[in-house]
Amino acid sequence: QVQLVESGGGLAQPGGSLRLSCRASGIDFSQYAMGWYRQAPGKQREMVAVITPGNVPNYGGFVKARFTISRDNRTNMMYLQMNTLQSDDTAVYYCQSRGVAATTFRNVYWGQGTQVTVSS
Image (tube, rainbow, N blue to C red; front, side):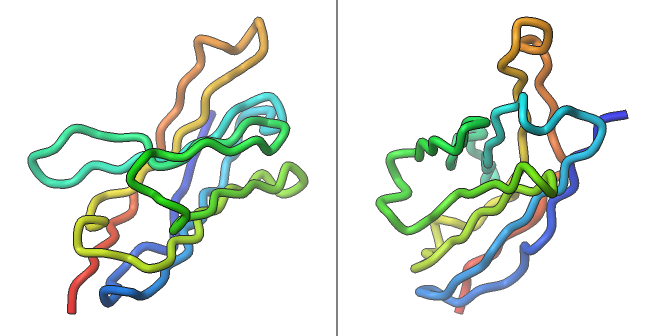
């Protein structure tokens, strides 16, 4: 059974920081690209950052060097360090895993999400 469990969300002040974590189980973590997506009320889900099994990151255009995605293939963990948070960053943040091998490329899994609220 595949499980993606996010943690680390909460309330932050504008200009503050949060670090999100995603623990994956039930998959061969090193064969999956991982990513963070977010969805704000009334808006579509959007890509925040993704990272390949080989640790190559890619970021959504709005990130502008404020966020850093990372992963640890030894512990099946993925992280998102978010700095200089803005009110527009308020959203539910979701962890996603996506297979990249010939036998897993159709596999896409999502976590339940963690709420991030940026407010003074």
